[in-house]
Length: 272
Image 1 (cartoon, rainbow, N blue to C red):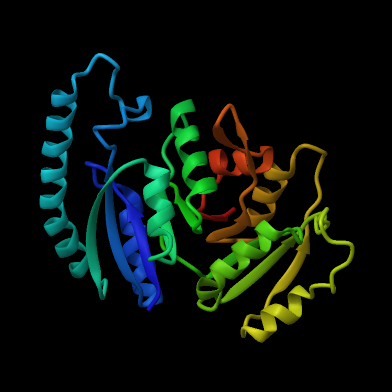
Image 2: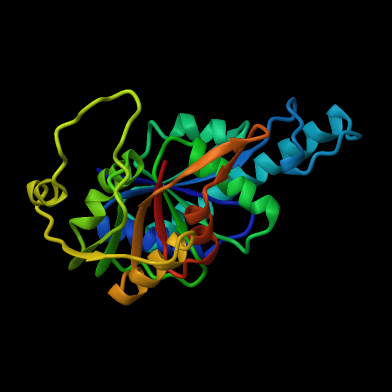
């Protein structure tokens, strides 16, 4: 059974409605996850100042964890009432990217709320998407769990292919799949030659019929052009590879990915 993982915090977020709708559509399980930082590893990302005493931090985390365990009962009841077949709840302690890297081996897809983009939130999203090792759907506010039309950004890269593979169960549910072809990036420094990859044959082997559209735009405007093409196609979901790099020990998105994460009005499935 396909298994979805939804990251939550103390507030119920719009992306949980989307997650429940997607779970119903895919007949998938849905697990809510609350993650707390380890009190033994202070990290400014979570708001612990260097002046906090160990006892104070430990007490704060333990009280929050106790509250989170109680929230699990409410979550599973809510999800079951929303029609989710196998709701579950988990609480973890540790670095958020590290926790998600481990849980990525247990689940198929992670869902995150795409909040208003402050610098801190962008850093958090970059760390999660680029480090967690699993496909991620970023869900904007008020998004509906429709899969009538799915747009796939395709440039032949390893990231694009991984995103396509992760999205196959969703593509199988779509009435229309629109492949948005950009400039191909399929060169690898370690490989002199590879057999060509036929995207249409690959999709047909998995029972997916697609239509193809080229995307063009000014240099440096790939993200804007891709969003415009997805909008013109009437897409409910955009599937694409996530591109990024480390900068001062922090993962940051590449230009096109950064633009789409900040500006997309529809959910985006990303895979690094």
